[in-house]
Amino acid sequence: MNESQIKTHADFVLSPNVVSKSDISRLVSEFERVDNDLTTASVRSKVGTNEPTQLALSPQLTDFLNQNALKPGNAKERGEIIKQLRLLKENVPVIHMTFAVTADGESLGQLVQWLRTSVHPQSVISVGIQPALVAGVYLRTPNHVHDFSLRTVLKSQHEVLVKELEILRGSR
Amino acid sequence: MGLFHKQKSQNGLSDEEAAELEGHFLDENFREELRNHGRLYFEKVINENARLFKEDLDATIVQVNTELKDHVVGRLDASIVRINDELKEHITKQLDDQFSQYGKVLKDAQDTALQSLSSSAQAVQEQHQQLSATLQKSIANQNVMATSLFEKNMAGMTATKEAQDAALQTLNGSVQAVQEQSQKLITTLQENIAKQEEALMRAFEGNMARVIEHYLLGALGDQYDLKAQLPSIIQQMEDNKQAILDDMKL
Image (cartoon, rainbow over the protein chains, first blue to last red):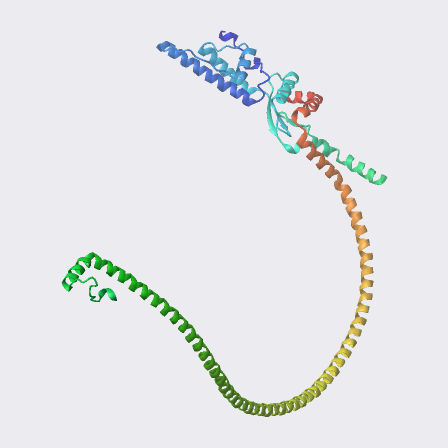
């Protein structure tokens, strides 16, 4: 893989297990660690103490490299990948989603998949929790807020409920 | 004994011859035989005499015993009779003396006891008279005190009864007033309760919606996990997809 073949950050495809911006940060730091290990191994091979280098990669990094057809070749290519990954981390579109309960990984994967399909292919989520929402989600894009929580629905239907109770009392 | 007497020989032998013959016949063995014969005869005579003497002695002893016994019995009988008579007289005399002394002492004691009893009876009679007098006096005092106390109690009871009557009258008045006040209070309370009930009902109706909302929030908040909410969330995002897209493109 030469320099011209390396994708830019805008072309990177994110795997479903990369959900948040911190996942991308982990990818960057892990790839930096891989780069350091390979550089160290290269230096040792030149000195003569050539020990086999065992690269232990996380599933997220493995999926990311496979989906983007990236291989940690020479030091220059690895440096370019690290650079693009850092750019990706800075420019990735983030959507803040606040839930009433703790979000599990599977649900977050489905949500981020919908966002990447419908909104932006590199969307990531910043997850928050607020039990007062009861249910639903409080979604915040860069410039807007979309309140899909049950608390807001009930609040908007308060007058309807009072009228129903008055009708019920009148019938008794 | 003829054997030991010197005898003239009848056949005409001289003394010397006779002595020689005699010496010839009367040698040591013969003498010893004679001695033994004499000894046996002497023993026999002695034994016979001893037997006769013993029989005589036994008879004499028996006779002496009988006579001694009769004599001793006679003397003893006489002595006993005499002693009996003397003892009887002595005892009779002694008893008479003692009886006379006892009678005298008894009479003295009776006189003393009689005198003591008389004095005791007199003392008891005097004490009885004193006690009767004291008792009569005490009874008279008790009567006076009881009469006085009864009169005082009667006065107190009369006053108490009057006070009770007054208190009863006051209580009756109070009860009537309390009943009237109670009736007023009940009326007021019923009116207030009705007003409160109306106000509470209004407040209840106003807050009922919040109560239901709160209940729903509490009930759903504990049991609604994200997986269950996911279809609804995705649907709502789908409904607002365009707005989200527009915002992301800005």
